[in-house]
Every structure is written in structure tokens, then in C-alpha cells.
Length: 467
Figure 1 (cartoon, helix red, strand yellow):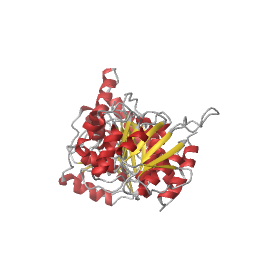
Figure 2: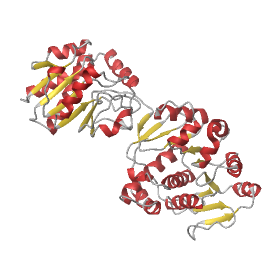
Figure 3: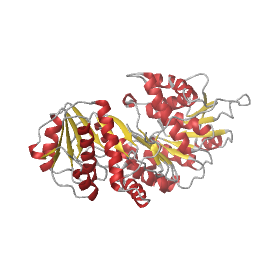
Figure 4: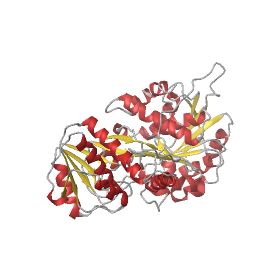
């Protein structure tokens, strides 16, 4: 089984393979391991299905020849379709071992099972129409479609679909998972995802978000040791209320909302302290019992919001920046946040992120890492494939988000969960990772078409699973 906690970019994968080769493992052996491992997986799923294997000119095509021969030896009706002769020595060797029939790509006819070995890791441009038209024709005529390593037409590192591709039934990753196995829109094209170990050993700061391990309160804990979370309210009362309720249901010991006169507490157990002006707010925030502060949900975007944001940024307290706080900070984000010494977590969605980093490259991983490094802030770039990056480069992809989270108010809840985790004393990066997992898990427990309040109600159950 492959390690989900160690995802390799195309360049890192190439380096890891080269390291093995330099240690005496022939590239032909790596290709044999990959091809035979993938063939065994195909055999387990669809043993006797007539199969067409598309083999490109590179090493992914070489894997295809190995797959085809292994299946042929098992008695499967296999045909190889190739648009060109192999170009690498390893692929040439693999083809020389193939004992079945090969036809030109243009002459191939659809088979029940379609195995894509046209292009794999490292593709940076779209497959040309002279090959892709036949690829699409043969894909459409199959009953079952399998991609080897990555579907042809997918860029390895950022989830981009370079060609318009339909959904595969299965994708078999070779040697290591790549970023695009978990990033949209590519992830939605891959069907079930499995991995084949070929002996690759490499360290990476990029992994898939894993289930956290949490600790229950001890007999010595009290409300302050479990964390006092302060939520700063603004123009939209409901957003701050949701954040406060989420922080409370995520395990914080004490929740306060600092708000203008007339603000109503969402629950009797959540304290609302009236704030008369910015000096009053600053005095209340100076309470050294406060463990974490949230600013942004429902804050507003006017002069008052900017004044409030500036006041919170001077605190030596862990801080969660969300929603309007990010809009107000805008392109000054790195300048403003970079002055802080305490842990900071920012939770932008794609639109807010574009305001923080106008020169973003539309590469979620690299952009998140760059912004985290420049600002000294932990970044949680929200979406169906959320990316969490620390200033030191540690990065997690959250690939199991629930699509029902595309509902107003759920981002406010995420901010509250992260604040609660921050208040427990963990690092900003860990708080962001734990908060993201708990948020997504609660959504799955809530079922379809939930409201924000129903999502909050499932937070204790998601925490229970982590104890």
C-alpha cells in the first residue's frame, strides 16, 4: 500500500526513481514492478474482460506493455494500441517482451476494458487532437476504463485537466501518489484510487490530511485551561454567533463574543460583552486568559472593520482570520500579518485568496505555501480540495470534503472549530488540520442538505471519533 502521508510531485518522483537507479535497481525492474502490480490489480477487478491497452512512447507506455503481457499470460484477450514507437530504453525493452498483437492507434477498435498508458506523470501540455480524438473514441466505446498512474491529459502537480476527459472507473497510482490524485478538477475524473508500491522511498512535506488524535480533558482541567475563545462580532450578527457556537461544540471551555450594544447571545452559555468603542475592545482583548481570538465572520468591510482588524493584529494571542478580515487586509496581508509573533491561521476561499495574493499562479499547493512563507501565517485555502500550508512548508490536502458544505455559514463554523483547537494549545498548522478534518467529518455525519446549526450539532460526534 502507498503512503497517503507522502505525496510526491513529478520532479520529486523523478528524483526518487533516479535515486533507486543509482543504488543499483535497473529502470527495467522498476517498470516491471509497476506494470505487474497494476496488471494484478486489473486482474482482481475484471479478470476475463477483453482489454485494449493504449501505450504511449514514454515510460508510461512501457508500463502498458508490461501490463498487457502479464494479462496475456493469464489468458486475457489483450490488444495494444500505440500511436508511436517507444522512445526510452526501458519502454523499448518492455515492448520487446510483448508477445501479443499491436495496432496503430487510428486502427484500434473499442474493447470492453480500456487501459490508459498513453501519458502519465510529468505531462505539462494537452494531448494533441491527432492522438486524443482516437483516445476519446476508444474510451467512449469501453465498459470499464482504467488509468495507469494518472489519466492522460492531467497535469501531475496541480489538478489541471489539460484535455477534456471523462471519468475513469479506476486510477492506479504507481510508486507514490501525486498531488493531482487529490486535487480538483482532476480528482473527480479518476474514479476509485489505488496505489502500487514499487519500492520508492522519499521524504515529502506534502501529504493527505489524516484523522487527528485528540485528548479528552483531565480531572485537573477547568474552563480556562480548556481555552477561552473570543469572537469579535461585526455587522452580521449571525456569522459571529455560528462561530461562537462551533467553538463551544468543538471543546473550548469558555466562549465570549465582543459585540456592539444590542447583540444577542446565541445561547445562554455563551457570554456577550458589550463593546463601546475601539479602546474598550482593546482593553477587553488584553485579558491574558484569552487563548484564541477569531475576527472576520460578519465583521463588515468599512472603516470600523479595518480599525478592529488592526487592533487584533497587535495581540500576542493566537488568531484566526476569516471572511471580511481577509477582504479588509487584501494585498497588504503579508505586511500586516508578518509582524505578529503569535500563531495565526487564515482561512480564505478562492476569491478571498486572490485578494491576498494577486500574483497567484492558480496552483493551490504552491500558492498556499508561498503565501504562508511570505506572511508567516498558516493558510487554509478552502474548497472541495482544501489545502493547508504552514510557513515552514508542511502541507496537507483535505480530499474528503463533503459537497453539502457549499452552504452559507459553514465557513464561519470552520473558523470557530479552528479557534477552539488553537485555544487547546496546539500549533496553528495543527489546529487548521484538526479543524478541517472535524468540519468535514461533521458534515458527513449531518447527512444531506443540512443547515449550519445541524452541522454544529454533529461536532461532538466527530470529536468522539478522534479520542
